[in-house]
Length: 185
Image 1 (tube, rainbow, N blue to C red):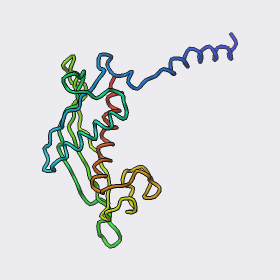
Image 2: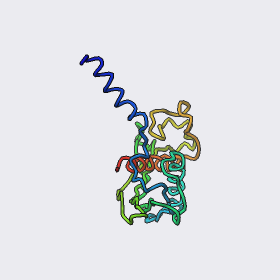
Image 3: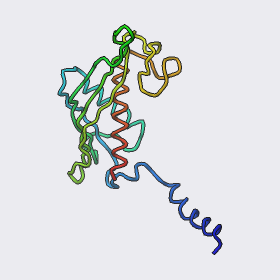
Image 4: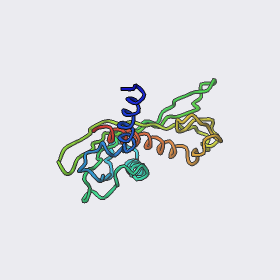
């Protein structure tokens, strides 16, 4: 058989199967929805569980891999607790004065299959965001969200510095969770 014809034949068989790949395709077929109830909070940080839960719901809703529903109608649930919050100096200037803080959130989370009553993922997740003390993250000279862009070059850096760092940390955690969910199966 002609080698060129053989290659064309192989590609014609492989290419169509690649065109219909779906990230949600690796999730067990009976899991169509996810609930994200309020996380427990084992830290002294007031309101952090609510902020993180809301942030996770927002990220899952935006990615639309599994619709977020109430726990009573969900096929799966993301449940866990905030176990640690660290807000510590990260970088210093030449005068040894703190120029950047790193806000880190650590969670213990389980992704539970509510249909088959089993835990699909049980893992510790951690995410961070950076902020300075200037009060204006759009001019602080810090890459607050770790995307390689600073200040006027980064169109999503705005708001109260610590709140933005919290949002960035939650987004990083949600991305890791979503990656684990779609790659588990």
